[in-house]
Length: 144
Image: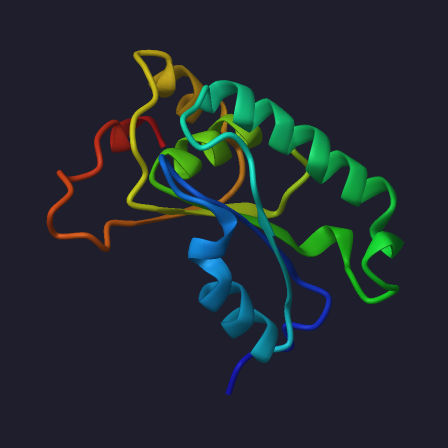
């Protein structure tokens, strides 16, 4: 039996050369479990650090005004989910202070040599999933 997931908001960010539509099924599945979901469209060719900083602003906005969805979003239950370079942007967002509970990084891709510095600043729980056997193993995990 699943814990009460009501009030949770999962914000999904796509990766390189991808779009929010690529995560429609994931968003619908989360919603079917009783969570709120938001699939974002940001530039899909980078710059990923910039996308991470934009994500911070979006999460801060939602944190201040959760009623833009409805009265059932709990700002203490915002989780960021990013795929590939979107995962790197999520890491940047957490490091830059996005008020999220934690993050899920799906096959996260490195953005630059700066990534270890961002990872070492994250003080929230992160789940890193390597789901694509054709993608090289996640790097820099010792910084998490």
